[in-house]
Length: 118
Image (cartoon, rainbow, N blue to C red; front, side):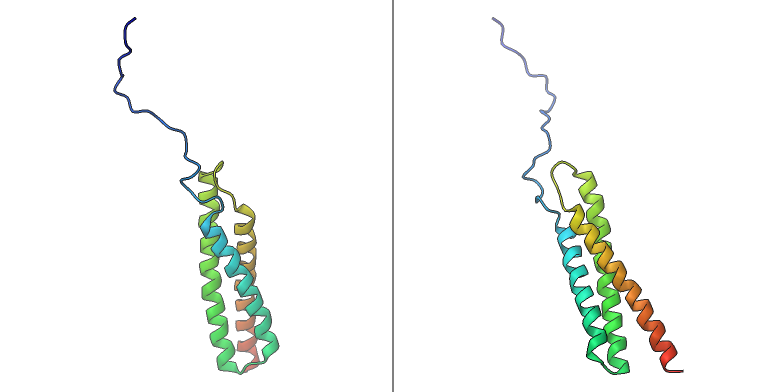
């Protein structure tokens, strides 16, 4: 019996399930930023801060919400690309909803502050 010769072509492996974490990390980041921003946004209106302090809180809320929405969109794209091996779509979507709600809260608060001083 004759021994088989190697073809020289590299051996192709399937995707390695250990290559990526099971839940997407950006989805986790977006999820926790969304929860944190919602809590801060609700508390901000009940604390009763002065004008300048509310303005800085709104700006910080807008910046963190924008970062969280960016992470959520990137997470959804990564999860789609790594479909069988990564999960976290629900976390990313919840983070997106929370971040966009806080971005809307920023615009509402900014509008209220601009009309309240006139």
